[in-house]
Amino acid sequence: MGWLWVGRGLVGGGGGSTGIDLGLSSYAVLHGRKIASPKFFRRQEKKLRRAQRKLSRAEKGSNNRRKAKLAVAEIHARIADQRRDFIEQETTRIVRENQAVYVEDLNVKGMGTRRGKLGKSIHDQSLGMFVRTLEAKCDRYGRGFVKVSRWFPSTQLCSACGALTGPKGHEQLHIRRWVCDCGTEHDRDQNAERNLRAEGRTIFAAGQAEK
Ligand SMILES: [Zn+2]
Image 1 (tube, rainbow, N blue to C red):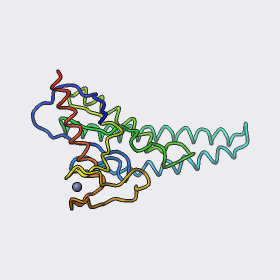
Image 2: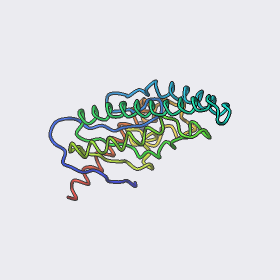
Image 3: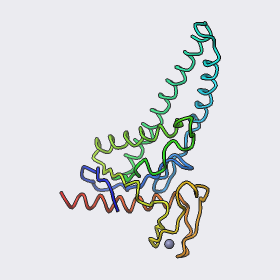
Image 4: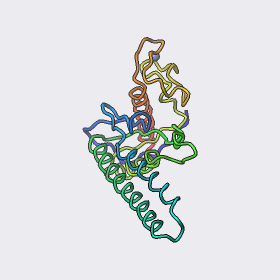
């Protein structure tokens, strides 16, 4: 199985570790808790679309157009502020709670697919920043940080028996719970987090052994 080792720093005593399953029904699923997708993402997106429509209808060179332009810029600035605050807060908490974090490679979920032609949603755009910020904080505070390859089947793999019996990709996005042939019932996201955690740990241990 291909993987990417980006960990560093020695893991100190105490504190747990967590896999981080990103961006489907929740913003992120961690070991033992979920981070809900913030409501402001959708709210601001709606406001932004409305403001952009207004701008596109305003006559060139008019006072209204100038105002509409300003309104769009203000919404963009507010989105950036809220996104940064949200990411700062959540990544700080993760680093405080864990000695090592195992994040899936972002391309796993095909970012931007939800909005199609309209481009990436605010939510999708924020995921890249979330992972970069988390990695920087792990680095700063000596936490382990591992990115698990996009090819690792975190969703399909049964975390109990290791069979590939789980839901597959985007076609089966609606499947939230499933039962493996081994009889274990799974929550899709929690199962993915468990798999990422186990895989991340293995990668992390291998990296430490090489040093
Ligand atoms: Zn199983």
